[in-house]
Length: 301
Image (tube, rainbow, N blue to C red; front, side, top):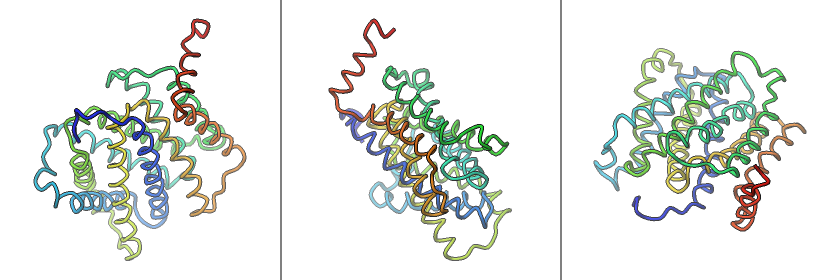
């Protein structure tokens, strides 16, 4: 992508919402597989499938350029962040409900907003902070920290949130120098190489249907991360953070369809609060200008 071409900011939130759907499908299929196979095996095969999918899609068009990068250290760090985050979230999915695990992972947008000013020098407006606060409040209502989720297993999604925030910030920082396909190829390759020893030791024979599902999930992961990378090309990380909360909607719906885990009234209330935050950011320019002006008035200090 031409770094000199003006970014279409509106496209960033749309792509982030689509990526969130892909990640929810990924988590749903992964949770299903954790009932019968070791976590490291699932993640290992998924990363191999992700790298293969990116190679097959982009190599005919990009040739050797697909492997060309000027920032090997950044690629390694991104790959390790995503690999660690994947292992943690899948361990969380194996022990906690889908919607609740997804909700806890979504501390990541809060961390992104906190860190983007320091790392990326991106200024978050008051409106961004209010939207993030709405999203985080909704997450807390859905997760209900006092309702039985505060066990040692909660450390897995919390750790995944930290890794995910670092991954997105590094992706944003390298947007002008790395092709999205190259970044996603290295992500898959690094994950597959790092997990190879553990995946091989823990290997259990897989039914053909399950093996095909893992391969499909690897393709979904590749597409999801590619879409998210493109989203970060068009909008600041702090702005995109709240839009990632749409993954909670998808997770709740898919959890109900796949595992008969229907949301209760409290969960719906949390989702409505999250939607309010997203609506505040996705509203028209006039409403956004009015809201920002109201927040910036002297009496609002």
